[in-house]
Length: 218
Ligand code: NI
Image (cartoon, rainbow, N blue to C red; front, top):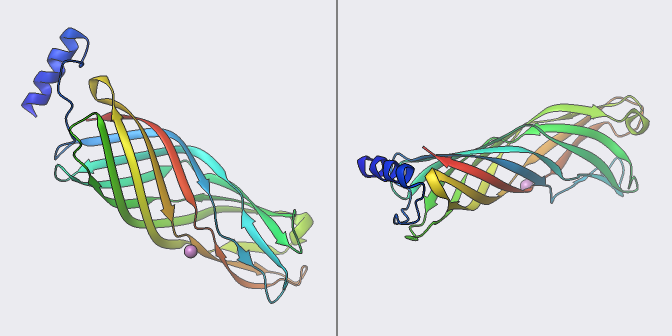
């Protein structure tokens, strides 16, 4: 820590860190990153048996992503993925292709255990695995399709995998890219008699999540 402070002081005086050796993250380091995050669903849901050839899928959503890493050791970190809510259109497939069924907003906080590789360079790659909790905070049904029936989406707990890299710039700033695969499965319940679709359906969202960020190490 003293060495880091000294390096920081020298860098501040010289206005550059070019002459300093690149260092891996160290125990106690904290990295906060913010940037553009995209949630790209890969799964879908069938409405069978109520609508044998119809289903639903969610389109892509983008938002402000925030991630945080706390280095418990020089190589092991705890990561948190947070974000502003993501908004997705839920669209029909098969017999109801093209129909916008609803617009949903969700928050997908994810906690991972990360392994950070020591590359002895300005690149800090890492991989992680952990748990996601997805909370659908808002569901706006399209009355033109659901005819007044209501749609509810259960919260989801699932497994998450992650890989990312930070590239160290000057004065503890960095730029980063990360990707997650998250198992998000929800029960969608349609209530009401208008559509004839009343029932509970399994919906797989299972998104890839991408983020491009700017980070700062503390
Ligand atoms: Ni799944």
